[in-house]
Amino acid sequence: MKTKCITFIITLLLPIVIFAQNNTNSIQISITNIKSDEGNIRIGLYNGEDNFYKKTYKSIAIKAKKGSLTVTLDDIPDGTYAISLFHDENDNKKLDTNFFKIPNEPYGTSNNAKGNFGPPKWIDAKFSVSEHVVYQSIKI
Image (tube, rainbow, N blue to C red; front, side, top):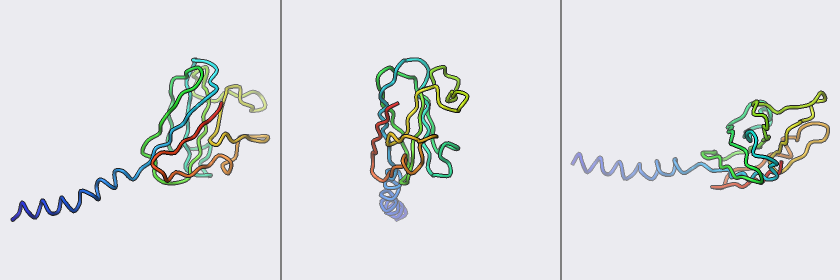
Protein backbone atom coordinates (compact mmCIF):
# COMPACT_ATOMS: atom_id res chain seq x y z
CA MET A 1 0.00 0.00 0.00
CA LYS A 2 2.80 2.40 0.91
CA THR A 3 4.61 1.66 -2.38
CA LYS A 4 1.43 2.30 -4.38
CA CYS A 5 0.94 5.65 -2.62
CA ILE A 6 4.53 6.76 -3.32
CA THR A 7 4.24 5.64 -6.96
CA PHE A 8 0.99 7.60 -7.30
CA ILE A 9 2.57 10.78 -5.86
CA ILE A 10 5.63 10.48 -8.13
CA THR A 11 3.35 9.99 -11.13
CA LEU A 12 1.49 13.19 -10.24
CA LEU A 13 4.61 15.28 -9.59
CA LEU A 14 6.78 14.11 -12.49
CA PRO A 15 5.00 16.18 -15.19
CA ILE A 16 5.26 19.29 -12.98
CA VAL A 17 9.00 18.78 -12.49
CA ILE A 18 9.57 18.15 -16.20
CA PHE A 19 7.51 21.23 -17.17
CA ALA A 20 9.41 23.44 -14.70
CA GLN A 21 12.75 22.28 -16.10
CA ASN A 22 11.70 22.98 -19.71
CA ASN A 23 10.21 26.42 -19.05
CA THR A 24 13.35 28.27 -20.11
CA ASN A 25 14.59 29.52 -23.43
CA SER A 26 17.80 29.96 -25.37
CA ILE A 27 19.14 32.95 -27.27
CA GLN A 28 21.28 32.06 -30.26
CA ILE A 29 23.55 34.94 -31.25
CA SER A 30 25.22 35.04 -34.66
CA ILE A 31 28.12 37.52 -34.63
CA THR A 32 29.41 38.63 -38.04
CA ASN A 33 32.09 40.91 -39.49
CA ILE A 34 34.78 39.86 -37.00
CA LYS A 35 38.03 41.28 -38.41
CA SER A 36 40.60 39.11 -36.58
CA ASP A 37 41.23 36.13 -34.32
CA GLU A 38 42.87 38.34 -31.68
CA GLY A 39 41.35 38.61 -28.20
CA ASN A 40 37.84 37.71 -27.13
CA ILE A 41 34.27 38.62 -27.93
CA ARG A 42 32.63 39.82 -24.70
CA ILE A 43 28.84 39.50 -24.59
CA GLY A 44 26.49 41.02 -22.04
CA LEU A 45 22.80 40.15 -21.75
CA TYR A 46 20.69 42.75 -19.96
CA ASN A 47 17.21 42.20 -18.55
CA GLY A 48 15.97 45.75 -18.03
CA GLU A 49 16.36 49.33 -19.14
CA ASP A 50 17.71 50.40 -15.74
CA ASN A 51 20.50 47.79 -15.99
CA PHE A 52 21.39 48.40 -19.65
CA TYR A 53 25.18 48.90 -19.93
CA LYS A 54 25.43 48.85 -16.12
CA LYS A 55 24.74 45.37 -14.79
CA THR A 56 24.55 42.25 -16.92
CA TYR A 57 21.99 39.56 -16.29
CA LYS A 58 24.33 37.06 -17.93
CA SER A 59 27.73 37.51 -19.57
CA ILE A 60 30.22 35.40 -21.48
CA ALA A 61 33.59 35.83 -23.17
CA ILE A 62 34.56 33.62 -26.10
CA LYS A 63 37.68 33.42 -28.24
CA ALA A 64 37.38 35.62 -31.32
CA LYS A 65 37.28 33.94 -34.71
CA LYS A 66 37.78 35.92 -37.90
CA GLY A 67 34.61 36.04 -39.97
CA SER A 68 31.69 34.92 -37.85
CA LEU A 69 30.71 32.75 -34.93
CA THR A 70 27.59 31.63 -33.11
CA VAL A 71 27.03 31.62 -29.35
CA THR A 72 24.05 30.24 -27.43
CA LEU A 73 22.91 31.54 -24.06
CA ASP A 74 20.79 28.91 -22.28
CA ASP A 75 18.37 28.94 -19.35
CA ILE A 76 16.83 32.32 -20.18
CA PRO A 77 13.39 32.94 -18.61
CA ASP A 78 10.62 34.65 -20.57
CA GLY A 79 11.14 38.41 -20.58
CA THR A 80 12.56 41.42 -22.39
CA TYR A 81 16.31 41.59 -22.97
CA ALA A 82 19.03 43.43 -24.88
CA ILE A 83 22.54 42.37 -25.88
CA SER A 84 25.67 44.45 -26.04
CA LEU A 85 28.94 42.94 -27.20
CA PHE A 86 32.40 44.03 -28.25
CA HIS A 87 35.57 42.55 -29.71
CA ASP A 88 38.13 42.95 -26.93
CA GLU A 89 41.05 42.79 -29.34
CA ASN A 90 43.74 43.42 -26.71
CA ASP A 91 41.95 41.25 -24.11
CA ASN A 92 42.06 43.88 -21.37
CA LYS A 93 38.43 43.09 -20.39
CA LYS A 94 37.08 46.54 -21.28
CA LEU A 95 35.86 48.43 -24.32
CA ASP A 96 38.67 50.81 -25.22
CA THR A 97 37.59 54.34 -26.13
CA ASN A 98 39.30 57.51 -27.26
CA PHE A 99 39.36 60.89 -25.51
CA PHE A 100 35.77 61.59 -26.60
CA LYS A 101 34.56 58.17 -25.30
CA ILE A 102 34.11 56.85 -28.86
CA PRO A 103 34.91 53.11 -28.97
CA ASN A 104 38.24 52.06 -30.52
CA GLU A 105 37.19 48.41 -30.65
CA PRO A 106 34.38 46.89 -32.73
CA TYR A 107 31.05 46.56 -30.94
CA GLY A 108 27.45 45.64 -31.62
CA THR A 109 24.02 45.58 -30.06
CA SER A 110 20.93 43.41 -30.44
CA ASN A 111 18.71 44.35 -33.38
CA ASN A 112 21.88 45.98 -34.78
CA ALA A 113 20.72 49.13 -33.00
CA LYS A 114 22.84 52.20 -33.65
CA GLY A 115 23.36 55.14 -31.33
CA ASN A 116 23.19 58.83 -32.18
CA PHE A 117 25.80 60.79 -30.25
CA GLY A 118 26.11 57.98 -27.73
CA PRO A 119 25.48 54.26 -27.31
CA PRO A 120 22.35 52.60 -28.69
CA LYS A 121 19.23 52.99 -26.55
CA TRP A 122 17.34 50.22 -24.78
CA ILE A 123 14.20 50.91 -26.81
CA ASP A 124 16.10 50.13 -30.03
CA ALA A 125 18.01 47.12 -28.72
CA LYS A 126 15.36 45.30 -26.70
CA PHE A 127 13.69 42.08 -27.83
CA SER A 128 11.26 39.61 -26.28
CA VAL A 129 12.05 36.07 -25.26
CA SER A 130 9.06 33.76 -24.99
CA GLU A 131 9.85 31.12 -27.55
CA HIS A 132 12.08 28.13 -26.94
CA VAL A 133 14.88 29.59 -29.12
CA VAL A 134 15.27 33.26 -30.08
CA TYR A 135 17.75 34.34 -32.75
CA GLN A 136 19.80 37.52 -32.87
CA SER A 137 22.27 38.39 -35.60
CA ILE A 138 24.72 41.15 -34.66
CA LYS A 139 27.21 42.74 -37.03
CA ILE A 140 30.21 44.34 -35.33
